[in-house]
Amino acid sequence: MHSTTDRRLRTRLTSINKHIRADRPPFGATENVVLRRFTTLAGDPRRVGEMYQFWFRTRGCTFDRAGQCSMCNYGVGPDIDPRHIARALQWRMTSVPENAFIYVSPSGSLLDPREVPRELLTSVLAEVARHKPAAFAFESRPELCTPEIFGEIGAALPRSTKVVVELGVESWSTSIRGMCHLKPSPQQAYERAVRLAAEHGFDVIANITLGGLGLTHAAAYTDTVASVRGTRAAGFTTQMVFPLSAKTGTLLGWAHGQGLWEAPTLWMLIRVLAECAAEGEATGRSRDLDISWYNPGLEGVIQSRPDGCTACRPVLVDVLEAFRLEPSAATLSPALGWSGCDCPARTDRMLEPSPRDPVYRDRLVEIADRWDAVQRDRDRRSLPLLPSADGQ
Image (tube, rainbow, N blue to C red; front, top):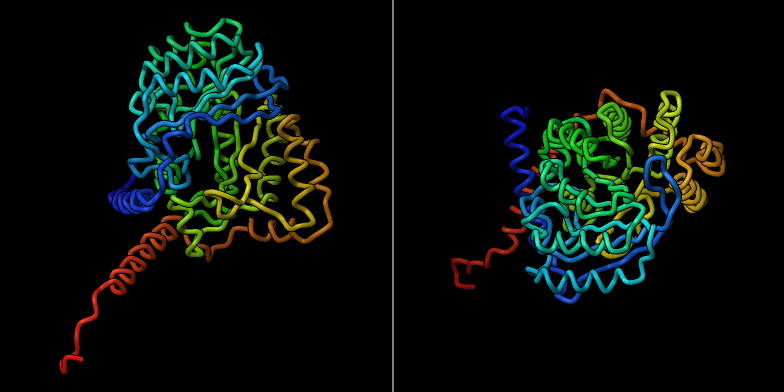
């Protein structure tokens, strides 16, 4: 439960986030479906396969519109015709073979009827089922996971299809999740969703961030490792770590532009994975780690990404690509043994906690105060010039 002071601060930050998001240009009415293909792991036990990842246009994430998620920007658009989107998705799926991995996502939550009308969801499930996939994955919020909707998904798909539900945990700390990520989903909602998924035979992925708004590098590292431990204990099948990037149209991106947030380094991600992989292997939870968004292109909405120097970055990206397909401590060895630059040492120094570092609440207050100061300055500069006393 947040204190009154925390609730007031969160209200300020949410309001700022909504203001920033209001300036985003909407998707065009013709940008209906996007397909990406890549090799990945899926299922339990996990196996390598080709992932067909489909994004389809909606009016935008409901929770985005409420100013939640300080770091996300998957776009907004005009209201959709569900039949038109269903036809576009059907057309793009014609190339998908049987026994593939299929991932389908709107800009927010597939199970949110305010974003994805039920008739569209029914069409999506029917089209996915037609391709008899080995695995079907989607993302949603824990509050939207109900026995009724899970039952509908299970009934629509072949019994041989493994259903994978991705939940945006971000942090297993309810305070950090609510304050730094502006995501008020309670712990009990995640725990209920995991139990419900298990009852239906679904796998559940915990999306966990690295580098939340307001967190120092040391605090971010500690929070991510603790979140992997917490979601493992709660019964999530896979822990997927997302190092955050600065995106336009987000509070985190705005803070980055003001010098108040810095992306985690790729070495931080390597350190997190090394610690969590070793712990998992020691406790029988090997191969339950995954990663995403560690190598986004610096284009579109991405302003700053997790990185290394020109010498170590190619090595790290190659190691991380290999880790996606073989998530073990041994896979990280080429990075852990790297000595070609001082980036590892600099990251280790950043991860040393300091008693002089302000707590994240103070850092969030600084961000909110900076926003107010920038707006006041902008308002002053926009005032019309008044004539002087002599009329000049």
